[in-house]
Length: 149
Image 1 (cartoon, one colour):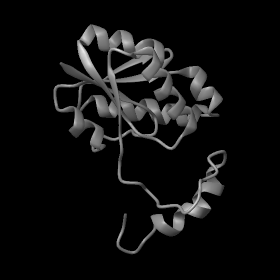
Image 2 (tube, rainbow, N blue to C red):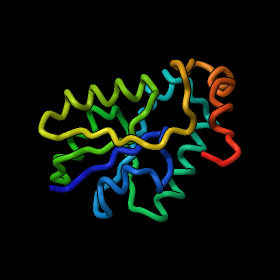
Image 3 (cartoon, one colour):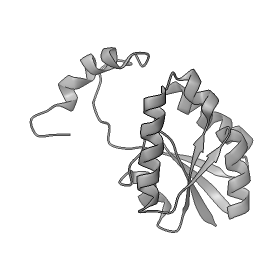
Image 4 (spheres, one colour):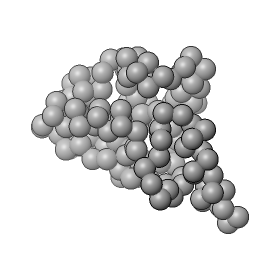
């Protein structure tokens, strides 16, 4: 059976391990969920950045953008593609984790696999994800190591 890669805004790069886990023939989709982006306070400039990044990625790898809620769109796409697995980049974002949990309930015929990545920073406590400045103050010590990430 084929794989379906669900790419979200927290993993916009072609070098993410989710692509290696899925293989080169896996269909790749991004679900533009305007309600979730609004709830996460994603502004217009960030949305434009996401869209431009997706367009650039699509020039190197076949990718489709669909509109709606992931738990409604992805089961239908997986069934149409004959996918047995939906692979998604893991994320610490509670909104994305909730969407993955909803997807698992909405698509019981598919295995939903969250693919981990090397963390950008190693934190000793749960980060405050409401404001980037608070997160960055804790993360910059481990993210800006002399030998790199």
